[in-house]
Image (cartoon, rainbow, N blue to C red; front, side, top):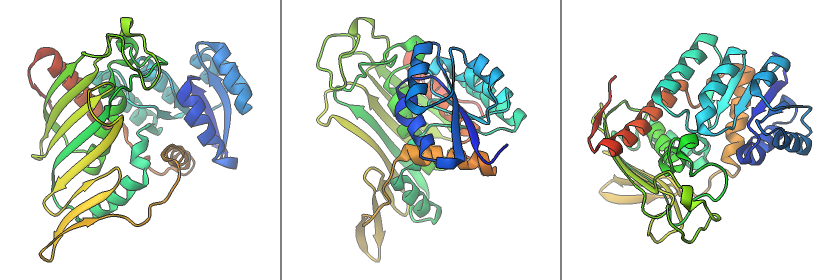
Length: 349
């Protein structure tokens, strides 16, 4: 590999245009984005012209075969994550794949297997891990300030935030709705801070009450007549270490606030809300609320991309591992399976 990382982009949609391309550009001389592929070649062409990318393809297979690449960003709908990631890994590329890892646990397991087999980095776009709040709280947790983390609450809830663009309401292409889109971000954040414990038992319910009818849209008009995902998912995960996590996520719910993204942790030495960061402790006979006076500014996405680039160039470990991707995918699948059957799902080791 040269000292300059040669990057290809698979998928020319909003996340590629709004996050990956500009973040790679801010890496300066460390990175050259040299190719973009999208099944709609005109979209790839427009993106390439905007960011001065020299090569354009309507097939990522052709891009991987014809352009020498060191790394790839996978920015396609969830259904196509696994084949694109596996193809890039087998071609010798490091891969940053947008979340969620895949559509099924089996796909995530195969992606992890190929990453191990090829010795290439595979990491996922859980950008909240790279936030200043999470970084600070992780240091407190690692220092034992919260003690044994035995309970967590996860919220990713919008009042009327069904995306009016893309394929977010298409279950066939996405695999689900708010659980697999925004809920997975807060779920991963909680799991990361808890040390990614092994799940044992999962109970979930999903609801489609609001998205399949006309209504107010705070994120644009959506195709309510072809709405095939859940509005809301609610679940509980019990881990093998005895800890418990409860989850609520929704694109549309009759609640007060327009948008809530929050992780709450409870340990025997302290607790915390992550966004914004506040730590709760009892010390010297006093109950304390601790607020950081200052947190570093900057984009979580830019830190994520920058650290991926650094890992590719130096061989450092990526923050999110393929094995963690497998765990979160198993939990998502189990929540949907429990909702479908009405029964709790017991996960194997």
